[in-house]
Image (cartoon, rainbow, N blue to C red; front, side):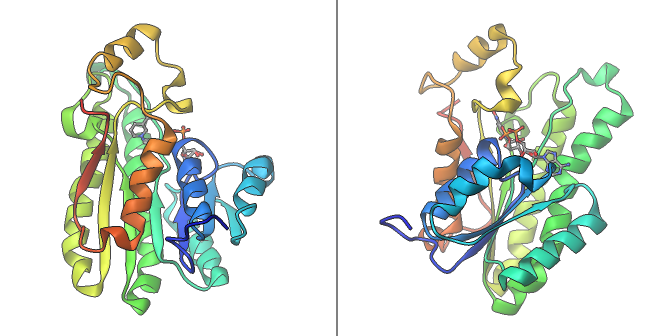
Length: 249
Ligand code: NAI
């Protein structure tokens, strides 16, 4: 375990927790003493190096394969994993995809896939963890939205709709569950260097960068710092907020 242990004794579920932003959050939480349940779409075996690293911090790490868009699968897999870990204190809805294209020509499948994976998934996971959080009368739910859901982006109507939806859902859930001691907040990252943005044409990368006051893309670790704040007691009176993590766009 690290020198600091802001999350000692806490268990966190992190969707898409073996890659990109999700993995950086998992590592940050592990280094602060948390036990982890990380989900992935791949066989957990294929992420053995990442899992080994997460386990090196000394906490328990359970890896499960689940399609977060599938309600029944999430219900079964997440409930079982949480049961085995003995509860859950933190949920990070991080899994997400993009299927970019102008709305004029967007296929129904491109629309539906993004809404399912980026928005409905959170409904699925939240319904799975809430009974546990209600029992202990505490919990922190963190939804990874996007600055695109705040300001819009051509070619991402489906993604912007899903991410803006996530923010509206979070603000509402914060009001529903606040009285029960369960906090819900969003992080809206800006341009972060991961697999998701790796395929972007250089021209677009430069165009994004020119709009960032800090003049650099963000790192997954930049986002993980905000997630740690929202997961820990440091944010004990923060509920229903969206924190932009975009370098000042
Ligand atoms: P990534 O592509 O590296 O990671 C996405 C993760 O989601 C992967 O672990 C993948 O396995 C998982 N995932 C995808 N579909 C899934 C499904 N059906 N079921 C379960 N897991 C699934 O991308 P990145 O950048 O790490 O993205 C993480 C989150 O951050 C996403 O929600 C993304 O929308 C959001 N975000 C990313 C930004 C960026 O610039 N990279 C900016 C703003 C938000």
